[in-house]
Length: 332
Image (cartoon, rainbow, N blue to C red; front, side, top):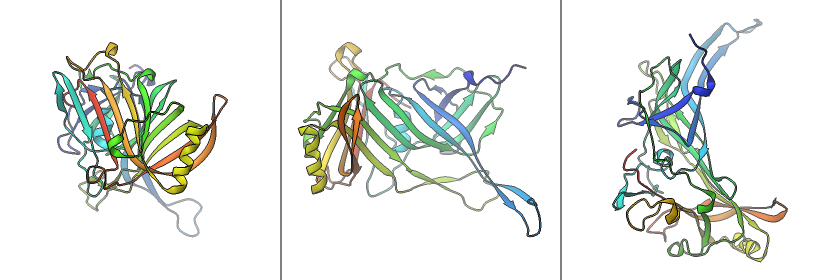
């Protein structure tokens, strides 16, 4: 029997129709990596007068994932449908599909869970009810978009047979030359004022979901999820020149600003449709600055401004975030 080589341990996923009910994991991840580990808790009891415990018993049993990767116009729909809200794409033109994510600000979103398989033909594992619980997208000129985050799933099942013949999403990475950053004073003006000296931009959402653990001997793991209070931020690293320092005035005044992180592919990259609809990713957020800090990038004095998302009733009757992803992918 061959050794279990880590290098061949891949990840494939399948979108579940009912959360927690396994499906074939028929999609291969090329730009996202989900590194699994056990979240198996143990309880110990050591009575008085004894050197070591008398009892060690298992408690909650689930799976956790460290999420890493690179930006892809195709694959980002997988975490976005899980950490924000589940949507179906609309046809923009011919084969161009627009995935429009607008999470609700005053009620719970419906999201997509996944059956996740990982490992190799030598030995593999899987779990059901895989949910992305956090996502970080970092924009910069060196890497393009770096992906980070977290996910969890139900109890890990060992020694499974991987779904045969998984297919990959379309190979369309987001390149560093596609990126822009905008900050505007109104939601209607989003995308109008481009920053010329922004060196790093980071959108992050974390702690999106909690797990539900009722007392029931029939349940090997958690049974469902519940919305919790997430942290939603967007950090810009700008040069500390007259333009960059101007946002200090907004911070001190508590002004709302509308930030857009954009990745738009040029025509030479290949249009998603037959006309003018490009591959693109637009992240729009209403926010107020809640942290200011000097920093340095390649010898240039810069300022980090961290915006925290706010629910803005003036933005289409109430929004805090909108993410639009345009590609050729018609379904998860």
